[in-house]
Amino acid sequence: MTKSDYINNTDLLKSLPVFYQPWYLDIFGVEWDLVWGATPGSRWVFPYFKERRFIFSLSRPQALNPYYGPFPVEAVGASWQPAVGDLAGLSPLLRKNAETVLAPYPGFEFGALKALGFSAKPRVTYLLDLTVPEVQLSNNIEKKHRRAILKGEEELTLKEGIFDLEKLVLWMNHAYEKRGTKYRLPTEFVRKYVRAVLDNKAGIALTAVDSRGEARSMILVLLDPGTENAYYIIAANSFTEPHNAANTYLIWQGILMARQQGYKRFDFEGSSIPGIARFFAKFGGTPVRFAHWQYTHSWLWKVKQKLLG
Image (cartoon, rainbow, N blue to C red; front, side, top):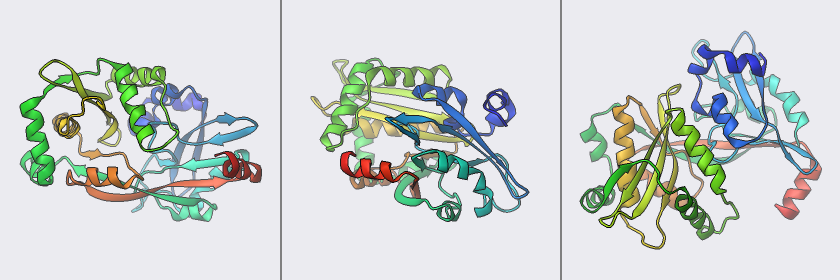
């Protein structure tokens, strides 16, 4: 299957996650191509990024791309994921890149990646079952979060949409800085991302405003018809006038709206940061382990990463 075949295969695309949709892949401004695997045991597809850094070719998930790797296009027998031998089609890609990083969906047969020489960086996400009654969803939330939701309902007004992207990015990058990371998101990228998600009817954008009409928190929930998942993908809170209930209140509203639209799971999109993981856990979700899998082919890239990051 070529990239052109993939882009024009409407039936296939309907069955794949949002992260595998051509419009989503095009957001990042990085060239992408396709690896297709077909054996008697399984069929899988992997649209991968072709990133360049100096003299190095890389294939890694981009920002706001939490799941990235081979994805089965149909169930085979009792197994949903490719078996070890079925990922041989990845080998040419691994040899071509200085580094390849994958983030397969939870439940992936990780032995297949170990057999190819990948090493793992563990992560955890929390999944909420949205098929249960709303009262059960609410009862599963820890009391502190429930009190915050009530406080948000009393003190804040919910508005659909994100109305100040510059402020959203400022808040997001302040949070990254506070964590001590070098990571930053450009305003133009976030603008392009939010617009693409909403134009493709793949998101719920919410803002919590106070009695003066000032924004205190914003979130974007990404909707994924292919997997029936909703993802907590973007969030930011005012750091000049923080409201200790705003984000919790918005998340709950996003959960309810995704449930009303028929989505079956709410995915907190993973975290390797303990404090954030604990915050997610208080919504009553089930912890699910997955990993970022790294394969480094170039010793020169290893040296560069060790010395310069």
